[in-house]
Image (cartoon, rainbow, N blue to C red; front, top):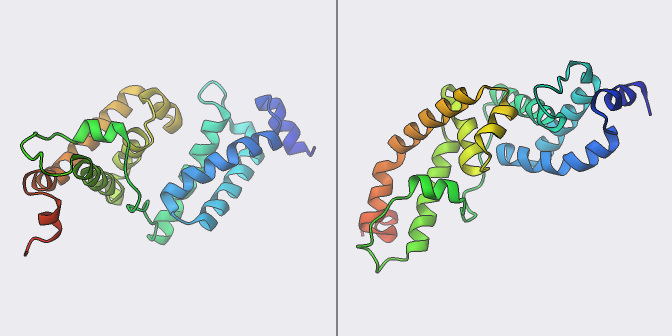
Length: 206
């Protein structure tokens, strides 16, 4: 055990190698949702663990848990990587979206179109909402971040506040504003999907 690992265990009460073993797969999963590139995620994760280890004297256990601090370091690195490259990819929209928070919040419909496949309509709506969240521009990044954590990752308000080191009222305010932005951006398209059906949305000239 080197001096950094000793400092880490004193500061956190956790063995660094055990911490790495437990948190590494979780961190890669989280980063892949942003980068869509495992190699990039691995590089960021490696740097984040090293920064967490080498700068553990800056860790404040009263403000957050050690794994939350690690994820925040990685998140900040991801944002920097995005700003530097301007090529950060979003999560693939090919997989079915099944997050209840997003469905409950955004998907309102009537039952007049019973001939359409309700599951497929809801799935397409959820995909559109999710894609719109990930497509928010850099100037709206704070809203993008809290919406991903809340609506896609289903984190609680308290967990988001702890993760981003923000007070609870700020988190609630940003989520409320972010939802308003998303609703404004997608409401017309969601109504069209509901009213005229998926086939007509995808083939408007048929």
